[in-house]
Each structure stands twice: as C-alpha cells, then as structure tokens.
Length: 179
Image 1 (cartoon, helix red, strand yellow):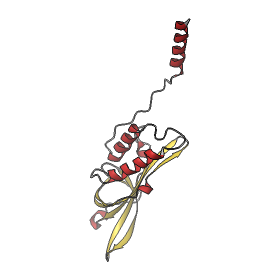
Image 2: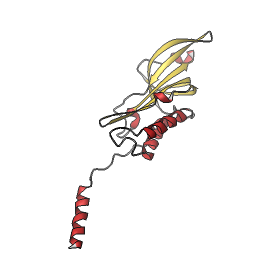
Image 3: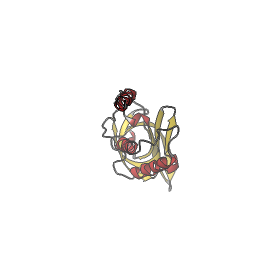
Image 4: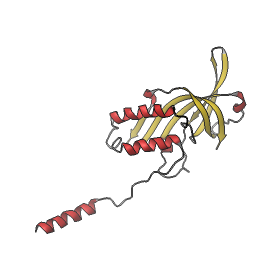
C-alpha cells in the first residue's frame, strides 16, 4: 500500500510540472545586455514576486553605476539619436547629442535590449555632427564624462512586464557608427 501511495505521489508530481521549455537568453555581444543578463541569472528571485526585492534592486543600482565606468559600457549598444542642443561651459560652446535605447522587434527572442532604457548625453565634436540624423540608430564610442545617478536606475515591473531603466550618463563621443 505504501509503495502504491509513493508511486501515485510521484505520478502526480510529474504531471504537475510544466512541460514548457524555459525561455533561453540569446547570446549577445552588447556589453550592457550581457551584464543585465548575468545579474538576472544571479538573482532569479529578484522580480519573481508582486514587487521587486528592494535589497537586490539596490545592488543592481550599484552594479549599473559600476558598469558605466567600464571602458566597454557603450560597446555594441544600439542607440537612437533623438536631438541636439547647444551648451555653454566655462565660456566655451559645444553640442550635446541625446541618444536613447530603443525597441526593435527584429532582435532575437529573449533579448533584454528591448526592455532596457538608457540615455546618453554625448558631447559631440563638430566633425561628427554631420554624421548624425534624427531618429537614426548608431553604435557609439566614447569616454565617460559625467557619472549617472544611482537614483535614476530602476527596475520597472507592471504585471508581467519587466523593464530596466539604467539611467542617464554623459559621454565624450569620439566615434559614431550608423547601423
């Protein structure tokens, strides 16, 4: 009788498990996407409940700010040019170009890039301005000029949607490559 009961329990347990495969993370050469994927993999319980775990969110904020100091932070990150403005600093005028992350339905399934918000204010030299067209997409190369604020880094969770706002950073842009 005990044996029959154990077999019945095992059969119920097997039938209750989901046969749906887990969504796999697409391999990426985008530094930011790699780092966010690694963080999510290390903290699977982070956003599993109704709200995001605040302790893990604070750790995420510190990590994102640390990543922005890495030389590779902008590597292969697709950014969309949104606009240009004039700025004056110490009596010298220069141009600031605003770039943001964007949603692209042609990205592989499982890509978190569609769920990442990032804004780069780029100090752009005059010789690169001619290469910029509004709402066009680019890869940027540059050096961090002004650190972002940890308070701007957020996890956005609404129902089943999860997004990651990585904040706003200022970079000195040395190269723009159209996509």
